[in-house]
Amino acid sequence: MDTPSADLILPAADAATLAEIASWDGFRPATFPTSDFPVDIVRLAGSSSRPLVVSRGRRADTLKALPASLRERAAAAFARASAPARTLVLARNRPLDVTQGPLVLGVVNVTPDSFSDGGAFFDAGRAVERALELFAQGAAIVDVGGESTRPSTYGETREISEDEELGRVLPVLRGIRARTDAPLSIDTRRAAVARRALDAGADLVNDVSGLRFDEAMASAAAGAGAAVIVMHMRGTDPRTMQRDTHYTHLIGEVAAELAESLALARQAGIPPESLVVDPGLGFGKSAEGNLVLLRHLAAFRSLGAAVAIGASRKGFVRKYSGVGEDAPNEERLAGSLACAAAAADAGAVLVRVHDVAETVRFLAMRRAIRTPAPANSPAIARAGARTASPSAAEPAAAAKAGVAGP
Image (cartoon, rainbow, N blue to C red):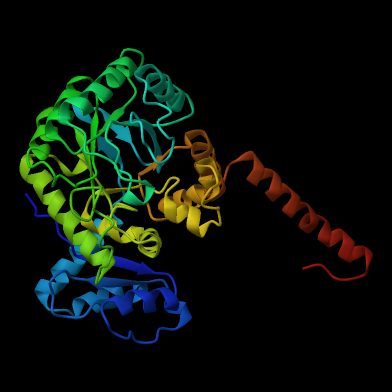
C-alpha cells in the first residue's frame, strides 16, 4: 500500500498567483514571460529545498535535472494531480460516476440550532420530506447530520450524547431509505453513530474531524465498505476550532493533515476510490484563509483522492459577497454559487450545499457553456454552410467585376 503523500502541485495561471504562492515559503521566483504561464509550483513536503517553479512547456527537461529521489517524488505528484476522478465507490460497492462533476451533495440538518436553517428540519418527518425534495431537485447524495458543527460565532452549542445523536439521525435515514435507494451520507464524528447509520442504509461517512476524533471511525467505515469524506478541522471540537486560525503555510499544513487522515483510512482498508478530501472551509480558518483554500483548491488533487468542498451560506460568503449581517441566509446564494464555480474549476467532484435546485441548474449551465459541440452537430454544419456560401459566389462576383479568378 502506497503511503499518502503531502507533496503538492500548485498551479499558477499568472505572475500574481505565482508571487502569492512563493510568499508562503519566503522565496522570490524568477521572472517568467507571460507566454510561459500557466506554471506549476512543486512543493515537496519536508524537503529542505525551496519549491520548484516548472513551466509546463519545459516540464520534462526541468524534472530531468533534479536528483533522482526528488524527480521521482515530483513526477508522482504530477501524476496524482493530473489523474481525473472517475468513480466514487460507495457502500455495497455502489459506483457513483463523478466524471461530470462536481455533483451536488444536499444538506439535511436534523438539529435545533443549525446556522443555515435554524432547526427547520429537526422533526424527523420534515427531515425525510426535505431529503426527498433535495433528490427531486437533483442532489446526487443527501447528507444527514444530527450534531451541530457551527462555529462559536453563531452562538455556543452543547456537545450532545451518542444516544441523542442516534435518536436524531436513525429515524430520518430509515425513513428516507424506505422511500428511495438514492445515495445517503451520514455526517458524524462518532464511529458508533456511523456504524448504526450505515446499517440503516447510509452509503458514505462525512467526518468533519478527518477520522481523528474517534480512532475507531476508519475501521467502522472500512467494515461497511463505505466511502469517506475526510475533512480538515483545526483540532477535533467544532466549539473551539476558531480560536486559532493562524497558519504558517495554510495549503501545506492543511494538506499534510489531510494526508495523515488518508493514511489512517488506507491502513484501515479503505481503497483510494472510496476516499474524498475536503479542506474544511470555516473549520478553523479565517475568512481570508477560506478564500485562499478556494483559490488553490486544485492543489489538493495532489493528495491522490477526489476533492469536495462545502462553502454554502458560510460567514465568509456573506462577508465577501456584500450581504448584510442581518440578512436572511438565502441572500448568500449568489456568493455560494460563485464558490461552486471555483470548485468546478479546480476539479472538485462534490459540492455540499443547502440550495440544491439552484446549484444543480447553475452547474448544468456552466457545463453546457464549457462543453464543445461535436464537429458533426447540426449547429456546426449550418454554420459551415453559411461560411461556405460566400466563397462559392466569389469567382462569379470577380468575373462580373472584370477581375481574374484564382
